[in-house]
Amino acid sequence: MQEELNQFERNKVWELVQRPTHQNVIGTKWVFRNKMNEEGSVVRNKARLVAKGYRQDVGIDFAKTFAPVARLEAIRMFLAYATHKNFNVYQMDVKSAFLNGLLEEEVYVEQPLGFEQKTLGDKVYKLKKALYGLKQTPRAWYDTLSQFLTDNGFTKGKVDRTLFRNQDEESILLVQIYVDDIIFGSTNKELCDKFSNLMQGKFEMSMMGELTFFLGLQVKQMKDGIFISQTKYTIDLMKKFGMEEISSVKIPMNTSVKMDMDAEGKVVDQTRYRALIGSLLYLTTSMPDITFAVGVCARFQSAPKESHMTIAKRTLRYLKRCQKVGLWYPNEGGFKLVGYSDSDYVGCRVDRKSTPGTCQMLGNRLVSWFNKKQNSIATSTTEAEYIDVGSCCAQVLWMRQHLRDNC
Figure (tube, rainbow, N blue to C red):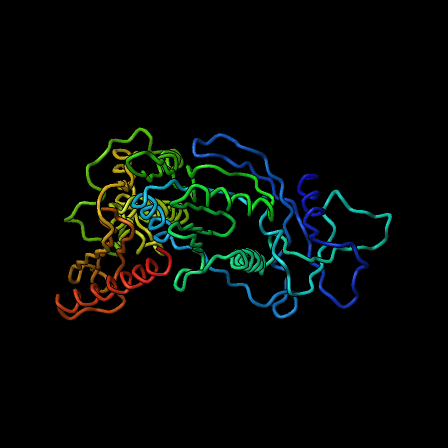
């Protein structure tokens, strides 16, 4: 806790002032957590002071709150490009990154619990920089970091505002931002060293090195490529739902199964079913083979029945068979962007809508996929296919522009 407050002083986050009479003062609280690595071991203990952002008033304590966030397929494209150019990817973590964001609004917060200076009278802190918990904090941090990078020669992508590029003769340096997590790589190792020194000179860094664990993804960089998996997450998921001792199956869903509302079926715990579906949806980040099965089960979260739970648990039985399965991005092969699409016809028995499926590859590296029920009812197989192709082309155009801007 004291270390956290010391950072406030170093970053000049706030100043102690007299309590204002006509201004909202926001409360604060302490949040404690253990930060872990990909093996589940505790790396360090963290105490964080956060503001009670739910007490903020729009137009007074904050205005704009939106901040760009990298799409998961953009991160996979980053890793695919790294294998194509055969360079290592590194990661860095800005220590208490949000405390570096400059505030435009006038915001006051209460003194932190346990560190009140009561002898000075009725005092509160006036914020100069952002504090965790404030609604505008992510935007303030993004604006600060974005301005810093552009001032130092980086260019921002036109379609992906979280990817920055720096050109040095024939070498390029790419930086991908996901809130306060940063990954970067370059065809020239010296550019990576310069970027590390640049960031260390401006911000206080707490973690640097080769990319191994990012957004729950385990990334293994080898001489012949990069392997992406969620093995630890899968094992923890099996334990969470008590499925360690079950038998495995070869496919996540039987192709002959047609799910419906099952009005006469036995009702199951809605909270548990939704927790299972949400966990499986995150697992599709590195396992496209379960996307269809999870997507179908996700349609019945409002009133899940025992038949729905049985099919959802079948996906867990499939995961037991392939806990260590993931995506392999080899160094060899071209980098041609190719998209594939397919669609069924009247696949949903509830509303007779079709379910399309698309995937996009860079050479022989699968980087993007999509599987979601169509919004409208197709009147023919041809119409269903056209709708699917349109969705596939939209994704391909986005990816092409992304590559043109930054690669």
